[in-house]
Length: 329
Ligand code: UT7
Image (cartoon, rainbow, N blue to C red; front, side, top):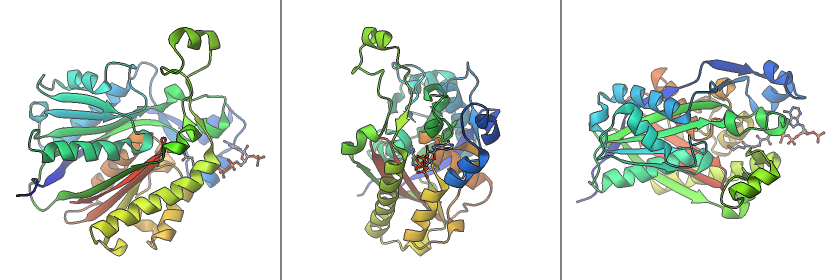
């Protein structure tokens, strides 16, 4: 007998109230709405309040996903939070989320760091754990407070990112909806192209204090752009081939929301019309691990994804990690 079919039973998302427009950014750094929009497709992004944490945003998205699934915290026995902006270096943000939601002490809770591919890595992990039969219902969350790791004087990075959270509840399939497959990859040789260079065990606390370097994101944008297009195309093609699903049969693609030009290139290479791709990066920017579940929740709630549809998720991010997933609704 094969593994039990596992499905996404509910989705939820949360975006902080504060909106930071391209015009606002032009007052902070030497940039313009024209440059940002034409190079990325971003118009504005959300910024968490100073005292708002990644775990609070994650819990808000999770509550909505639970309500959508018709389940409660008591049903959850696994929480995975994909994030590069945990509340603290330790313990795991998932433990704070467990506490905020009132999930039982019998639940397993941990964080996962695969940057912008984090949600797909967490989905794959939770799917395998539920498939083993040892866990029944999982919360898989992508949540980020990227505003806390940006250098607000660096125009090459600070205009790209935003804060937010998205969550899904995974559990035994109720109808024909189910996760069909996932594929994960990484190219560690490119790890330094996009990173936070200080603040880990590489720079012990006293050294970091002496350096006085901020723990902020550095990125070689142009190099990443080229690799990202290739990686996302490969990840999409591999999974479609493996499951013998022609690209034309995909009803909706939820790509990592980093850059509209990257999404456009993927659409062109896969020979899919651009309206097959769900895009909300104009309003949120790149929210890293939150990007796909936040877009997924909006796509479902707006009626863009319907029962019986097949969706393709595809992501790339620091590591460089990348991956894809096929889901039937
Ligand atoms: O989740 C993964 C996250 N990473 C990514 O998604 C990065 C992927 N890369 C990209 O999205 C694009 O490479 C960027 C949007 C980051 C940059 O766009 P680009 O078309 O590759 O621009 P560029 O880096 O080649 O820079 C072009 C020019 C440069 O000036 P010069 O050297 O031509 O005089 C930059 O200094 O634009 C300048 N520039 C800016 N100008 C106004 C860079 N950032 C800005 C800015 N405003 N914010």
